[in-house]
Amino acid sequence: MDRIASMAVFVAVAETGSFAGAARRLRRSPAAVTRAVAELEQVLAVRLLDRTTRAVSLTDAGERYLPGARRLLADLVEVEQSATGLGSAPRGELRVTAPIVFGRRHVLPLVTEFLGRYPDMNVRLELTDRPVDLIEEGLDVAIRIGELPSSTAIATRVGSVRRVTVAAPAYLARRGAPAAPDELAAHDVIAFVGLEGFERWRFRDNERTVEVAIRPRMIVNTAEAAIDVALTGFGITRVLSYQAADLIVGKSLVRLLPAYENEPAPVHLLYPQGRYPAPKLRAFLDLVAPRLRQTCEQIATMLGDAAD
Image 1 (cartoon, rainbow, N blue to C red):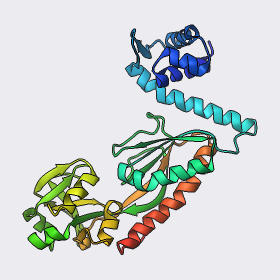
Image 2 (image 1 turned 180 degrees about the vertical axis):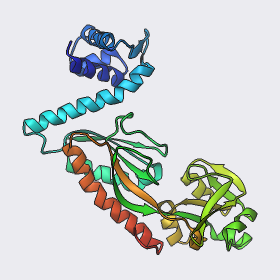
Image 3 (image 1 turned 90 degrees about the vertical axis):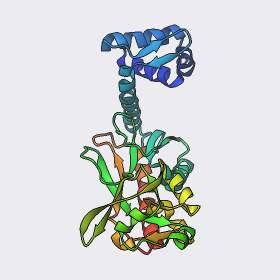
Image 4 (image 1 turned 135 degrees about the vertical axis):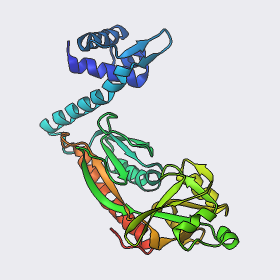
């Protein structure tokens, strides 16, 4: 059995959701596709796919096997292209992940530009605020905001962003502005659970980190929702600086308690260590890293902060 060929067949079945679809993609007979997957499962001694008369789905083992199979096949293509002299131009698929709002505002335009530069490239962009494992999920590069956990991945810092506390002028006209963090307990708060807890917020006071109680009148799970509610004059919320910078500059929101803000959160480009140095990844990093540095500097300038 050709293990690599069988792996490619399995990936095609997983991505098309059927043996017939994989057969059409690979220009092979359905019987040959079924046989290749069965042989792979026999060698691995584990079932990768559940078959019914209507659908094909991944088993738990198949879910674990798929990202690594994709990664190995992609690396093989890149090694072969390099050996034959085709590796100088980026080609193939790049899998990228970024936080939802930052990705939509600042990464998506760069991905579009990248695809315009390199017509042989495809990009799969996943926008999510949840932590992701690059290796397990078969990703090539991630944009991460915040301190990084211990990892073997390679990280390139491109700047930083701050947590900012904001409210609409209408709310402040009605309730007044807090002069210190401990006054937040007397205010209506819109808590964004994706950023921090919804019972206490952390601030810095004379080089000390302090926690203050808040009174959430509303709890939401996206920064956009928190900002939308704050814009109505309902209460005070806390988001990352890039999420509200244009609204602060345009005076739709007012930045509160800047003297008590925590240290900025770093922004990194992250990619797996030990991967073959693919031209597609190098080209993406060469385009995105300096642009994101510029973006972080522009956000800091808009808010009157020192760029990091």
